Length: 357
Image (cartoon, rainbow, N blue to C red; front, top):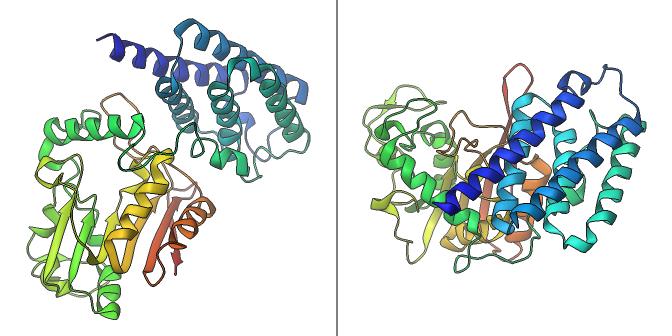
C-alpha cells in the first residue's frame, strides 16, 4: 500500500508541475504566430520548476522508478494541454535529466537547461525546431542496460497494468474486458502483411503483442484495400501457422520458442517503455527468419491505464524510430522489415510513412 501511495504521489506531482507550467506559460503562447515571452521570463519559469522538483525529490527520496513515473506524468499532461512536441521535449528533457543525475550535479544541469531554454526563446525555436538528440536518448541511456532477463521496473509495471485491463476492462472509455485489447488493430494492416508473406514465401507467423487474438477467430472479415470479404486472416494469408504472444494476456503469455518466417506487431511498440525498446526490437527480429512488420502510433492513445496515464508511453518522431530500427538491424542481416510510422495532423488526419529495409 505504501508503494502504491508513493507512486501515485510522484504521478500527481508531475501532473501538477505541468499544470503550473501552463499557468505561467499558457499553450496559447506556444504557437508560431504568438508573441513570445522574454527569454529571461521563460528561464525563470524553468528555474522555479526545477527547484520544486529538487525539493520534491529530496523530500520523498525518489528512486529511479518513481522519478520516471513523475517525468512521464509531466510529459503526458503537457501533451494533453496542447503544447507543441518541441517544447514538450525541451521541458521534459530538463526534468528527466535533472531527476536522474546525482544530487551534487543538479545545479549545473539546471543552469545548462535554463541556458538552452533562453537560447530557444531568443531564436523562436520552440514552435518549429526538432527535438534534440539528447532529449531522444536521455531515458534510453539510463542507469542500466535492460534486457529480457532484466527488464526495467516500468516494463514490469506496465505488464501488470495491461493484465489488469485485460481482466477488468478499460475504465476511462468504459470498455468491458472482451473489448479491451482484442487484437483488432491487425485487420487494417492485413493486406500489407500479406504482400510480405507472399514475397518471402512465408508460412509460419508470430504475432508479437497479439492482445486477445480475436483477429484470428473472426470470420467473414472486411480487409481495407481489398474487395469483398475473406473467410479468416489465416486463410487470407494462406499460412500454415499463426502463433500469438502477449505478456499481459495469460493464455498467450508464454514466451515462444523457436523461429518463425515472419513476425508481426501491430499497435504494440508505442505501449512499451522507451528504455526497453532496444531489447524488445532485438527480440522481435531474433524470432524472424524472413521478415518483420510493425506499425507505430506517434500520438496519444484514447485508452488510459488504470493509473490515469495515457496508454501510449513512447511517442517519438519517425527519425527516432528509424535510428532504433537501424541499430537493431545491424545484428539481423537478411531479415526484411517494414515499419509504418503514423502521426496525426492538427486536423486529426492520420499520416503514414514507411521505413523499409
